[in-house]
Image (cartoon, rainbow, N blue to C red; front, side, top):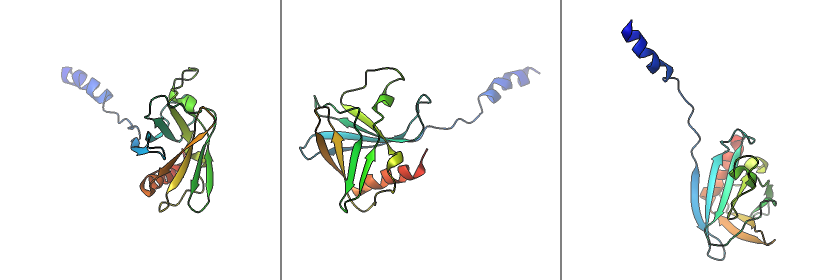
Length: 152
């Protein structure tokens, strides 16, 4: 009887827990030579809609991203996409303090998926109203396309 009671807590913790999806990360330089961190992940916060996100973080001091405009993408064949800006998801719901150097975008509109063999140009929206160009290698484009194809 004592052995059964001691084993009960162990059984309570034996329930498998689904692990969070792996975050993929890359570092690249833009056309000005400034560094950017790129993260690809599934939205983990239940306060926000499910789905895959692309987060861009400026590594250059003082760079401020626009948290309202979408991210424009273009491949070398002239195909265009625009991803919705979900920068507010970087902080708890209702918190207005979104990091100035980072913006987050929803991959749901990346349909049809871009070709994995072509580079992809991002037009990163900056707070001053301009865009900064960043070219993604086919390896990164393939990873993004695979996640966009998974949906939420």
